[in-house]
Every structure is written in structure tokens, then in C-alpha cells.
Image (cartoon, rainbow, N blue to C red; front, top):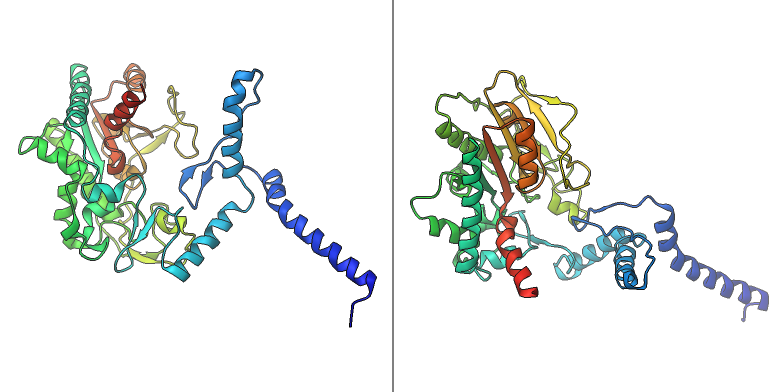
Length: 392
């Protein structure tokens, strides 16, 4: 029996209305929601809204920027990516092309962007010229600081697959090549410069005492950060043999949580929007902190305007040395320990910056400069120089 004409017209119009509404919802969501500058699912900074142009020449820049902004801030984008990844994992045991995450063995997850896996296989080595240039730049930096009476320490926060390759995939060790970091270690041989600390070696030696990295996060846990912290303190003691440092931190009862450096879920599982993956993580025993936050923080040039990455200064009146620390996220768990050993420590969330260094020397001359860079970004200076020359 056919539906009455009025009912058919109503159903048709309702269908059209629902369809048009569905098309408009993402746009309305984008218009009436506060814009975020960070993607949780992709762990990257989102494109900023372009500035309106006034000349024809600037229009060539404006529209690509507008296109990038609309793509990044499309309404319900994170939810759509999450649903796509969930279906890819459920149907095909994959996370999808937009997820820089690999599910390893025994519940371990690994970050895969930035040629990490290719580097693990030894397929993206540095050229001899790139390696020479990188070492030259570090030597120049260390020498300039030494002339100012300042000692320099450079450390790499090892990528997780460098310490736990056995969990990356079956037969991973048999398929491993020489990584860029291993190229550097081989070049230094048995006599590395005093500004260089090989945390890879220290962490591999400590692996038998429990996990040093989170399974669901790309960072080390408290146990791993403590190994790295003691390695740095040992080098500082070699530079300043009359200075005593506090390193006697102890572990308390382990805690089962979703892990990650912020205890809100590992960065890798957050990319997959998985909130139900938990693990047991070591915890430090509470200690009476000497270091206190100093306000206001120094105003420095060219600082990235990202939330949570502003410079800050800690002070411990019982300590003797003064430090400047150029750092990244691998310093988060180490910072409270390191701060206990400096009369004043300035933390700058970026790579070593000569202009910032000169500004900080004018404010307060440090005794030591520590630079920590995650392994996957350790050789960016040499690689970026090569790309720049190729474009010229």
C-alpha cells in the first residue's frame, strides 16, 4: 500500500533535512567550538588560522594556509580518526595510515614516525659529511662555552626501540641495522668527547632490573629517568670533583595506572584513543624537596608559544652549582631530581639556542649547560642543513 502523498513529501523533506544537517554539523562544530592547537590523536601542532592578506602576492600564501587550517580543524576530526583506526585494527589488525604507532610484542607499543623504523634497520644513515658537520658544530658549542668557564653536556633520550628492540616485532634483532646514533658512537670509538654521554649504554646495562620505559608511551618511566639522571650526575662530578650531588633517591611501591609521563595515558595509546590499557609502573619514594620554583621566569627571545613549554627556574639554596638545561619531554620525569642539585637551574624547552644562552649568561652565569634531545631529533641540525642545501 502506497504512503499518502503528504506523508511521502514529509519523509522526503525530512531525509533531505537530516542529510543537509549532517553535512553542516562539522562546520558548525568548527565555528562554535574553541580552536585547539594540538591534536591528541596525531600528537602534533595543528595549523594556525591564516592572517587576512592585502596584496595579490600574499594570496598565494593565504589560500594554502587556509586549506591547511580547515583540514586540521574540521569538526569531529579526532572522533572520525578514532573510529577509522578502531575499524582498521578490528578488521585488518592495523592502526591506519594516520597513526604513527606500531603494536609490538607482549603489549608494547612503539612510535614509528620520523623514519624511526628505517633508522632501526639502518636504511637512513648519515653521510660522512653530515656526521663530520654535526660533530664540528657540537665541538664548537662546547669550546665556546668552555671559554666562558661553562661545561657542556649533551645527551640523547633514546627511542624505545633502541633499548627494547626485542619487543618491536618477531626477529627484530636479526633484522637490525646500524642506526644513526650507533654511527656516532662508532665514530667516537673508545675516546668520546667529554661533553657526550651515551645513555643508550647505561640503559641497556640496567634493563635487567625491571622495565625502564612505559609500554604504552614513547618515554622512559621513573626508573629509566633515574638511570639517565645518575649518568648525568656522574659526568658533572667529573667536571666538578669537589661538588657533592644528591642521587640517593629510592623506589616505593609500584602503581598500576594508564602510564605515560603525565599519568593520563601513554602518548602512543592516546594517539589511538585507547584509554583502557594499563600497566604497573615504578614510583619514587616521596622526598623532601629543596628546590622551589622562582617567579618570574626569565624573558627569552624566540620561545615557542606552546602551552606547558614556557621557561622556568628552580632554586635549591643548599646546592652549589648553577645550570641551564635545554630540554624536551624526556626531561619531565628527571627535572625534579636534577633541580635538587643546583642552586639555580633554568629550564628551556627547545634545542640549544646561542641567543638564549647569551641572554642567560648576562642574567646569571651558569657552571654547566645540559642539552637533552630525543634520539629521533638528535641529528636534525645536520639533516636540515642538507635539505636546505638541496633546495638551493
